[in-house]
Length: 281
Length: 278
Figure 1 (tube, rainbow over the protein chains, first blue to last red):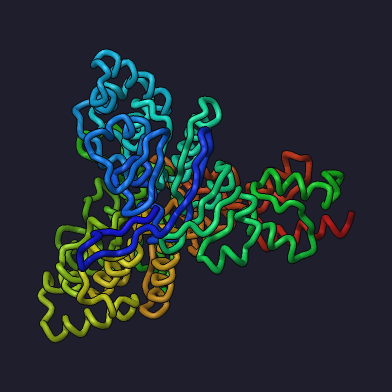
Figure 2 (figure 1 turned 45 degrees about the horizontal axis):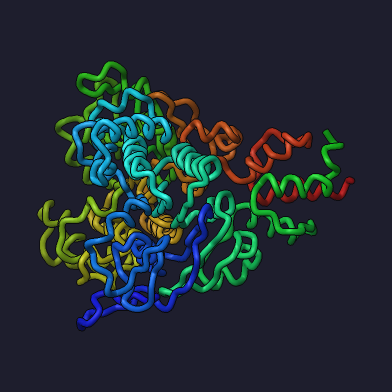
């Protein structure tokens, strides 16, 4: 598929150029690339907020083309839940319960069932039960973000699309939120698409990586494949996860790793036999 | 050198709040120092910053900035000495163009036009944004927006810059861009920098770190002193340095590791010593 912004006008600009790829059921796919590489434009095609200028995007059994009518997109939008950057800016209701219940009601769930869902989702995102009757605007920024995410989860989407969901949160908040998505993925088989600048999150959580540059999909692979070539990453203005950086420093000193570790657990395991395996303790 | 900020027994309670937001906070900041203030959300970091430039008035205790004791009489003179770069780059623009925006603060202070034009040009050049002078601020990247905000501040010739989580909404490239500019300006203009941050890399460049917890100063120390808290840092509002995470993973595997903080390089050296004595 390709996408041109303001196609057919003098302001036309390339957004996406000839991208082909598949995101599988139950996968955790990270999309990386520096600012302006087309990551967010791709995301907006995943629930037809944008339609391809040429080519097709298939979500489940629904094929989206340039010709697709906007009228029949509701089932698709229920299927793909989008958590935008700074999602808390979209809260609007008087209470947290009503805000979370809004989405499901919009898709035909009764008020009673929608409020029951709100109850369940608040627990799922790790908020105390008593926030349900509070105004979302009395909560902290991190809590508001969770309410917004609960609202997306309440629509019980098959795919959860996350655009830098932890931006602006403090480190403990970031860690809790990424652990929450990991649990949804592991325990409920939730398919996740994550756009991020955090290479550590890619190494820790994703099973598939798409690398975007200038609107093109320039590489796909597992995190291990993507991060095995530091020179290539550097040439594309992308960083390494912290473990991979540390491994490079250790290799330069004379240590050996095979395969190159991606997490501190893997690095510690591979270091152990090379430093006397704890015999010094 | 001398102190450019002196805070003594500062207390602050928000109107109608049950608990004090700041309790008996005292510290000095030397001219030209880079001081980081860390703490979890709600620990009092931003309240402290607002007490330093009179956006909030201390309940008791004193705040001295650039030789003046903060009071109703001095607050405007003190604000002229202290510039704050806020978290959200989109909330601090008023001008239609980048140059107008930088000029705004100077117009407010009644700086004559010739002097204003000179300072706007000079400030934009210092942050590397001269080429963008006639652009709309809305069209810039996050890092560029923060550089424009910084230009607006240095145009007013402050002695102190407070970074109030000013890199937290930026991507890694934008964060490097902003910290790089601050580091250069600090040296060129002999500025004092206070950075309120959750970012470990930003805290690491500070000379000293103040650790706030529930409105009290828990500890003041060098980055090495503070980073030695290891995995506890997450609870204290900072990320854990990578070397401390690896150290922790090795300790859990039965390896004896030094208690003191080691940065990556020193940890690599230490591990190599273990390797060599196997």
